[in-house]
Image 1 (spheres, one colour):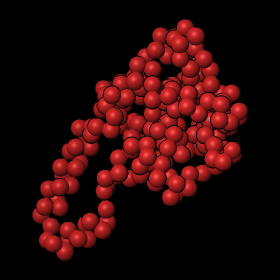
Image 2 (spheres, helix red, strand yellow):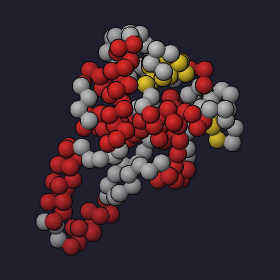
Image 3 (cartoon, one colour):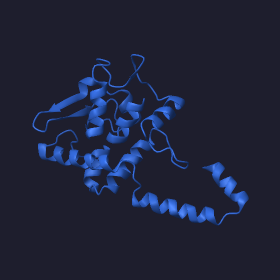
Image 4 (cartoon, helix red, strand yellow):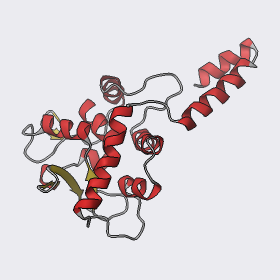
Length: 196
């Protein structure tokens, strides 16, 4: 599960895309000495094939999983992961080194938001972010030239060194929240902490 969480936060794959990721969907790009995954339209939200570009962290996860199961990348006790279990998910989230502070939402879908925020914080252009996020925009999303793939790979690699550093937007929200909490009475502060 920790590998699945780490893969998801570095690729923007949705929950079922990670759970159903098949070994055979990996495509080696010899010119670039990398591989990508082409997700089947049967598991994507938009019902279209989509390319998943791997940064160095995601590539390490795939290498570590290689050979564990001949069909699926992420398995539990030899079977494909169906749906992340809540307690297993929480343990895996922590084991993967994902943020655990109070106020941080830790659900599977939040990895998509985290991926998008990290790209934006790294200065990745909107058009490139849309391609990486798998947003339907009418283009043929599985046909990329080597130059376009290099651009996508460079973009996802930008988030590797940044880790989970706060983006400017996240910092502003946190500072605003701290100002509000600082003005609350002790009873209100206790209620605020329970809500978070």
